[in-house]
Image (cartoon, rainbow, N blue to C red; front, side, top):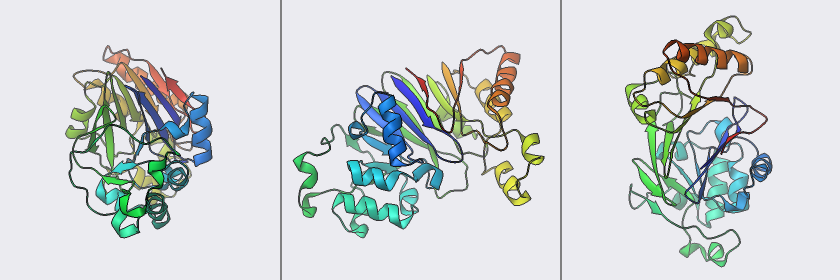
Length: 292
């Protein structure tokens, strides 16, 4: 198993999960060039990615998606409302890469229970079949599905997007990515419980946010139950889990309203007060943080 958070923060998010022979990218919120270079530093060729999972349609999670689609013809999976809410330019790029018109590319899937066990290598002849024999790269999913030997479960999170989700990815180990949420609901807690590796938002310190330079409407959005998760809330969410993770990535830190040492210390202090000791990996905006 390999988990590498290539970038995390308000300027862009992308996470590599490699397990059971599959290579999955969760979000593509930095440029395709940066993703390609960051993956190469992790000894992964971007052309060998099997799929992209999108948590939601905000730019810091999809900025590199159109170019990745043109370069590598990667299938993209997310909730139907999320795919329908992507910027039109990204939708069109995915449709063009599929060899389909946009309406067909956004058409309904045959089944909610999707199984994909192989993908043609980039450059293989099957990628260049006539449009009538091609399939859309846009794959709406609702419940759990199997993908390249992994079981993937999207779960709803409270955030101000069309239909935002986190992902529980299960193979020989379990990795859960859960960022961009205003609070941890009971269903979110159930979805992150028992994971081996947890990528969890630790966005801000409320006192720093309230005293900072953001305009009040933006502060109110971040503090709302459809905004972003505070450091202490992330810690208490972990503390209340029945089965704790083995490793935690603290993700999506605000550059304006948080600090790496503040996030780490806040979470560590709360967990230690509950007799819990878990390695913390604080993610960065401009540098990969990895677990192998």
